[in-house]
Image (cartoon, rainbow, N blue to C red):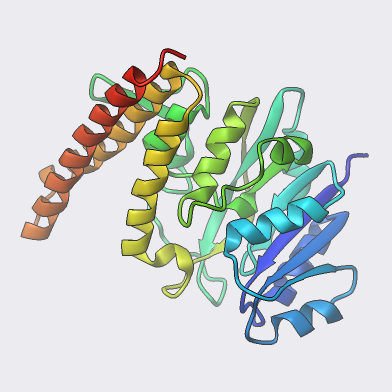
Length: 300
């Protein structure tokens, strides 16, 4: 039977780590690796006391990408799941994700349920349902992506499951260099974009993880997240290996912001809504221009 490694990057996660590890054990993980990323609380000592857990200790925080890569390098499974230290896997999650890993599939993407600190479900709109369907925009309308979760489809929605809900072939993850540590935000989307060049990303229509959402978590730092996303998109488009993919990704990024602008403009109830719409129209046009420049810079 294939072996599954669950890698848990942890920074100041003393209050949630034990339940996260327990969920991975209950789901049937063959190997659990906790990467303590320079925690200042009792995360490290707690991890050392947990049965059946390998602990990697980093003296200084490097961020989630660095911690995930450290765990990836130490793992021995055929497949890996990068489980955030405040999320919890469902008991059948690994079985469901593994079932989708047929020939040619490099990663399986499951659904998730957003919860608060008390594990109560949160309403996050259509993120976990409609927006996880791979689509591209053509002539002002969204259509199902002909290539599924292609790089264009991934940046058109700019919505992916959290890393906790994704299973990846370990050898492929290592071959593409793991997560890009130069990106401080949206490194998870970049990781999937690079995986999509290696094979198919398969969707699993089952909730595989409870994804904790709190105001203080890194992903909720809105301003930093938006700035980091813009830098990541630029990097992804500019470094895509072919002219065709550069243009497709630029078109997808532009479609994302044009759609955001349309929604804000037509549903505007304040001057702020109008301002966000104008900014989004500007960004959409900017990504179209970036795509043209990226295509013209090389004949590859």
